Image (cartoon, rainbow, N blue to C red):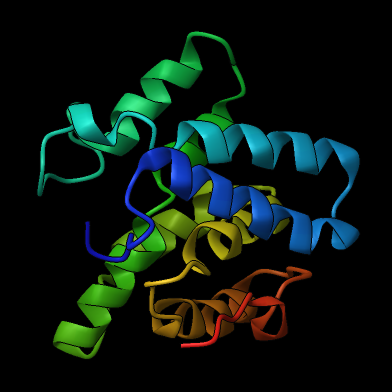
Length: 162
């Protein structure tokens, strides 16, 4: 899978658990628990998902993950975070291709969450993995910090030797 040289979903989860451990000094126990839940749910159903569909398509891996989590959790913001965990990357791809991203889509994302610290932490955990380029995060975080106060910035990115 592109961006996933670790291979299996289990190996991806293990790498994300390691990333969580590297950030936990800046996290509360509750945040750690929620992030661990997100780690274990967000990509688990990728093999069952339709390929190359919008993240809002009912068959997308994000929608399947949201559906799974909704059976056990009624926290709408957390469900939104699972649904839109790849939205910053999609916006980055638009920007790279066209020189800008869809402003309406950007603004919708900015309005989606109250707990930007939690969502930003998950973005770092999920995107600072071997095989993934940090450019999408390097593009997203300065723009995010222009509109939202978050405790995370580029110094928190987990970097690997190439």
